[in-house]
Amino acid sequence: MSYEAMMGVRPGVTFNDRGEANVLVWAPKAEKVQLKFGDSLPLDLEKGAYGFWTLETFALRPGDKYGFLLDDQGPLPDPATLHQPDGVHGLSGAFDVRKFSWTDGQWKNPAMKDYIIYELHTGTFTPEGTFAGIAEKLGYLAELGVNAIEIMPVSQFAGERNWGYDGVFPYSVQNSYGGPGGLQYLVNACHERGIAVVLDLVYNHLGPEGNVLERFGHYFTAKYNTPWGEAVNFDDAWSDAVRHYFVQNALMWFRDFHIDALRLDAVHAIKDFSPVHILQEIREKTDELARETGREHYLIVEMDLNDTRFVKPVESGGYGMDAQWVDEFHHALRVSSGQERTGYYSDFDGVASLAKSYRDAYVYDGIYSDHRKRKFGMKADGIPGHRFIVFSQNHDHVGNRMLGERTSRLVSFEMQKLLAGAVFASPFVPLLFMGEEWSEPNPFQYFVSHTDPELAEAVRKGRKKEFAAFHLEGEAPDPVAAATFERSRVQWHLIDREPHRTMLRYYRKWIGLRKTQPVLKACDREGLSADVFEEKELIIVERVWERQHVVAFLNFSKTPREVSLPFAHLTWHKLIASSDTVWNGPQTMPEKAEAGPVIMPPESITVYANIINS
Image (cartoon, rainbow, N blue to C red; front, side):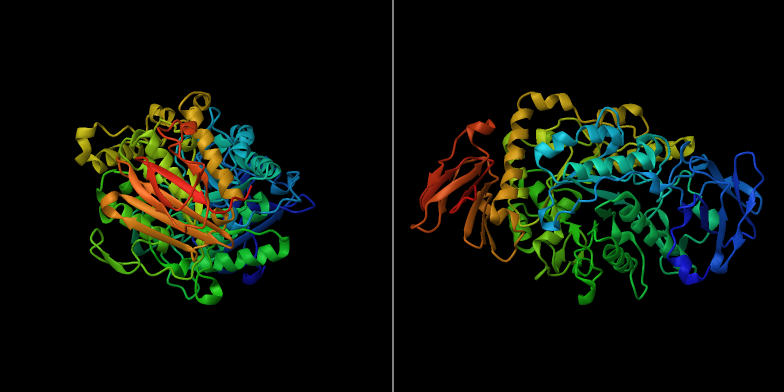
């Protein structure tokens, strides 16, 4: 097989229409590679160019457990294993992705601007902690109104409890969640319910326990330092095969699992100074796949960089990502709600920063950051709103607190409603974190289940050291303890109890408005203004799209504020007011109002429109 041909083939074990297993493994460090399964003698792989080894055999069947012998040492799991039935330390399980009977032929991925994303963690979202458990809740999610779920990483990790960012086999699907077949079933069920699936992937590092990739090839490089040690090798010697490994991984999720979008974790930690950045290469190969399949797939990035190069189209000199998470909107929103200004929150001035994020997406767009001690960011002018995803909470900013408190434990019920409205009223794509829609009180804490005692103890000590300065708030929860994981489960029985039931109705109302009101649906940044009154802790957001004009009053203070509706000749119709008694609030706002003064209750958001799309 030529080098070019190998670059177009997914690594690992695949099966063709005749049931023959095609094996491709990159192992330039070995002089001999053999496939070992069952009680049979090992099968020799043929050495090709650039460290690739190949084999075609009818002997290996789906369901067989197998591994590779490298120079008679092993067997080791397949670096591109799809299934680890016995965990990270066991053999790989041969899996034929073509066997699943898909029924989503008519499915069409919603436009990015129409996404309403619901982030969840498989293990804590349901009592079962499985893909099948998520599938049982799809009726609830459809009724809520979200049209995309974002699943935290599912690549195989050690044990059964983990956020997922410690995965060591990027192609695999966590065995305790239901394995690859379970994920295919869930995606198909989501599409039948009109729900897209976003999968969270980690391309900036791999976890520590069970990581065998370096035994096979030069997957990592000492050329760069990262928080996790040596960087993934995207631009050093031997990097072509590493790039092939990750590009083919992205394509596999789209092609074989029908995933609609990938969320790529912390791409600022991807070190690549190649002429074509790895993200751009994934973009270009994804577009090629889309032309073949007729399906549209999105690439979303999380990054600690206010750099529009990531979300600009390739033809404009960018990497072509479809959207990015905007942490700065979240940070400004949290400070506006009265939460502490420590750490990275210290850079944000409450409502002034939030109003800037409404207008400019990035708060820091080339201005000096005291926290970073340098100028930071660049202008996002001309970048449409649907390329930015915003939220009032997510797994990171909840779970990275020492005690993992959700917003429901940090601010009042009224402020929670205001924070939700601030997200939905923005010109950006909204994201919810599981349970926030019913004001879930349980924390979401950091948890792992490493089976290596030394590693488990190192994680435990590291977590305590990280929060040593916060000892007055109590001890950091033990991340290895099963109780930490159990505390992080959402409580489904609460949705039938007050005030959780009311909060859930409130979220459903906002999601309905987001879908039906032209201004809220448009993700248009051009027709937006955001006036800030710092001393009053007040923001007035106006948005215009076609014939509809919407005014949103956001009062973050604890006192009533007088505001004015514009244009004397217009009658304004209320879309929603968080203070209304129907939402357990203290004061119902008028259904109709003329230009002139309106009294805004404390910690509330009220939205009026001149035309209502019913």
